[in-house]
Image 1: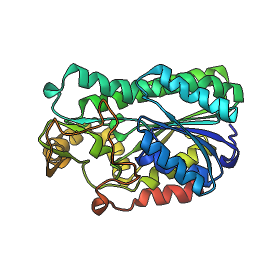
Image 2: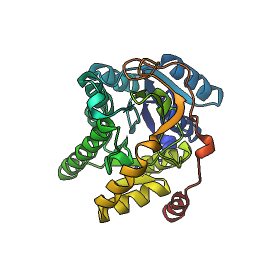
Image 3: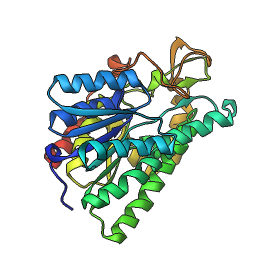
Length: 314
């Protein structure tokens, strides 16, 4: 399967107002791609497009809630109307919540599934016809290591990411059976220092955190850039992610034991936050139109990502 160089591509980045999506959009335009950025946060998108254009890049923005199929379809329509095609679709949008399952309402659980899983499904539904028409391309799903191993207090998010992995596996084989030259990549980050944890709803009384260590968002962007040009099935980001993958395969019971001891305290900060505090579950949350989150002090390098980069030559 041969994919175009990034500087010849039209790339859609969904979930681009902050975090991984924002960093990826900036990097793609720096490499010469024409980019369509989408998210719920209009202010975040406007500042991103302005930043891209100041640097000499080319981008348009579409405000969309990925839980609504018609709004996701509008992203694809804007890409075609402006640039004439779609070569790569990168789907980053996701929301989460830190709470015991019994403390979650059905509406909260469903909302996380609608955004984090169904948003990816809607993205594939609208992108694939255009990728097929182009004769090649990449569908890049930002999944999570929670698609391999669920965490306590994140039942809805883990369910969505497990569902995404099953969806991508089925879709990949269907496209292979059809003889389509479309790359389906699942990128599975470990804990990444983005504003994701600022956006989470909490019912444990404090601001959520990932279980440290954290990794820099640029590592995930590197994976996205690679998958846009080189067919690859799975791309794990972060040393802890790769260690967790191996351990889960060898002995899920060992991971059960570890998470029972560190999975509850490890996801709580010492900063009070009530369930009524602002979050991004149902509406966009202002004030976090940035790539990095609040945990730079817990961010560490990833030796395995450096080695993968050497091996893959990117």
